[in-house]
Image: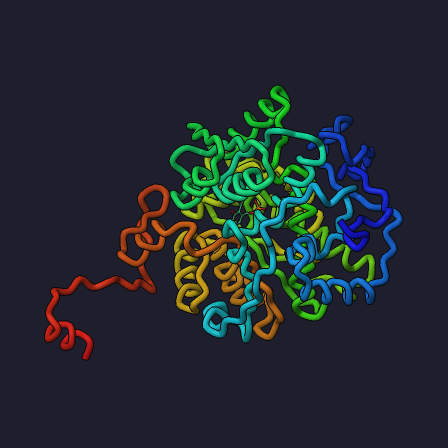
Length: 440
Ligand code: F0G
């Protein structure tokens, strides 16, 4: 490997996120929470004094490179998360490199002049999880771990299965039985992961997996893993790079376990601290009404878990999000907001994103539904420069799409979802005259 790809001689540590603790640990310790206080951990870097102009040029030059590490839309930005000592640990599937897409139709629906989608569904396994997983898998290999595990609402598991397979690691996946889409479950199977469907919800299974991982010496790759967060920072770096480092007014994203919110906030703060950007955008996090503990926390100041989270946007069906302390800090730091939306609002927003020729999975559409609500309430100005992150690919949950368009979609509790923008297929006989009549 050429010296061009070597890490800068910076010091990387794992530091407790709890402001009254801030205990520091070696970057090579297998830790997810602070042994002293139980707080979340994050990667911190010292001796990091890059020249922002040089960095921007370097990132731009790498776009034309065929070196795998440079062609990755994650590792291209590696100076901004220099936790590895040897890049030979990296497993890359050319993750990231996802487009910014303007959509006049979605903007009109949302009540804005303009919306740009950062579409993470263009990733190798179809979701933003690949941005974080390439880093998590690299750290697992660096630590010499043989087995990796996660609980997932589907996308983390699809991603982990792929990166584990590509990197020669054994993947162990825990899923909430009956509550993930077939598309996502199929990915885990196809990539060869050992897959257990547990009769419990995401939050309950996460507690279980944490105990098992510790007992069996398996490396945990949920977003409580700080290296997943480091990788997901690249979504913001790439978005800013694609906009020539022009900062939007708002970045809107869905919130589930709140790893992405934590990653985006950290990325933006760090980019601002080293002078890559001159201000922070405001973060707007959108949750599904039936799984909105973060919305409640933001508006009441008290964190209460939701015992039985319910939403058809199964990716964000989470009642006890582990990263809430980080996410709360990031939303507050950016003067951000947290919104919640109904099942009907998600379904209609999703259909509009589809009509725009873009498409996404249900959880992703919470962004547009949230924008519509926030614009109507006057929180987001109609002329604002808004980037909404679409987290997953349209094909992740085709069952949901078919039901919506055929008027068969039902929210939890049997509440019918109206097929407001429904588009049914038409069954016709093999008869040119009748088909012609139908089409004229
Ligand atoms: N959108 C999609 C498509 C997701 O898969 C997830 C999370 C989120 C949004 C929420 O992101 O957890 O960082 O706030 N899916 C996880 C999983 C939980 O297991 O795949 P978050």
